Every structure is written in structure tokens, then in C-alpha cells.
Image (cartoon, rainbow, N blue to C red; front, side, top):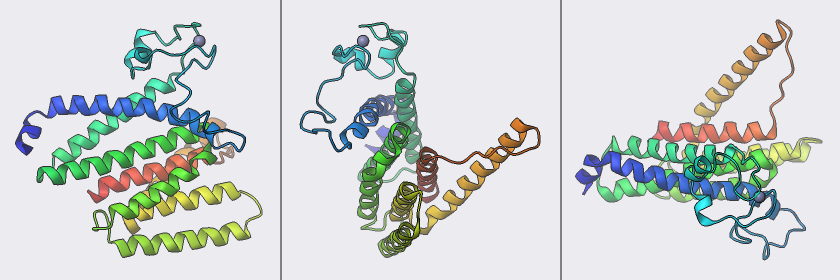
Length: 270
Ligand SMILES: [Zn+2]
């Protein structure tokens, strides 16, 4: 059976891409609806991830199922809504394309190290779940960064769960580093007079990374921070011909950096 998977990798890769792009379509729904659902005055029995059915954000016309087909529908409709001819945000098909492409990369990466089928499928399911969750965090944080707080918390618990048998790092290391991070974060939050949201979200993101990969997570995080800092410095110097422009990172940037570090940690750990 494992041989079959190996021999038909292009076909399986295509199926994984279709599956990933469908998940990307759902991630678009999450990114649009979750920030509204987390508002205090939203009645989640009348507005949630499944209800009301998909509708046009411009004229509220109900969108037919075929108009929700990932990537294909956007190309077919030439990027404009059928009901009122308004432009459809290009971020929708891009998220679907990214999720599909990332799913294929993970699949190909895992097939390169073939093991028993059950082991392969377990590793694939865990990795796809992790990367889909990270894409959902990045996409949602572009709409409303504070809304991703419960997603980081859930990812933290899933990381500890995946390390019950030490899949990515020993469980005591994961639990210990998470406890230290959350304690330091709580202390920083207690002493801070501003940027509470930022400290809260960074703490949760780093704790989630440590829950999955233990101390291994810190190296990709440091490398990405170094890389982003260097690029920003070069761009600011280039733009202002010598004098630096302050380019403060945003809450949205923070989420993307931590998520990218988690993704890189997976490639280091597998
Ligand atoms: Zn419309």
C-alpha cells in the first residue's frame, strides 16, 4: 500500500492539493466570521461559522455552492461577483492556492521518508492540521489580530497532545517550557502599562511553538526575527537614502512571524 502511494505520488499530490484548497476556502470563512463572532454583542446562535449561508458582502445575495469552488470559481467569474459585479478580493483565491500548495509540499516532504502506512498517515494528518491551523491564524490576524488568541491557545493544547508519545519533542520539555513562558508572559503583562494585547498574543504564540517543538522552536524564531529585522533595515535605508524610517512591527506581523517559525520548526524536526 505504501508502494502504491509512492508510485502514484502525482495523483495523490493532486488530490492533496484539491483537499488543501477546499480547506483554504473554509479558512477564508473563518477569517471573515471569527472576528465578528468574538465581538461581545454577537449572538453566535444566529451568526457562526456555518450560519447564515455564504452571501455577497456587497449586496447580501446568497452565493451558490459552485460559486464557492476554490480558485476555479474566482477564475470563472473573472474576479467579480456574479450578483452585483463587484470585485472579489484576490486574497480569497490566494489563501486557497497557498493552502493547497503548502499541503502538497508537506505530502511530498513526508513521502520522501517513507515508513509504514499508518505511521505515514498519522504524520501527514498531524502536519496538515498544524499548517492549516497556522494559515488560519495568519489569515484571521490580517482581519483582526486579537481574534486569534483562542486559536493560539487551542494550538498549544494540540501541541502537548501530539507530544504525548514524544512525536516532536519530549513531553516534559514541552510542558516545562510552556509553563515558564506563560509565567514570564503573565509577569510582563502585570508590569506593562501599554501593549497588553501584543504581550498577551506573543506569549501565547511562543508558548504554542514550545508546546509543539520544545527548545528547537527558538532557533527558527530567532532566525526569522533576525531576517525580518535585516530586511526592514535595508528597506528603510533604501527608501530614505540613508536616514532610517521607523517601521514598527504590527500585531499582524507578530502573528505571521511566530507562525512562520512554527512552520520552519516542523521542517527542522521531521
Ligand atoms: Zn453582490
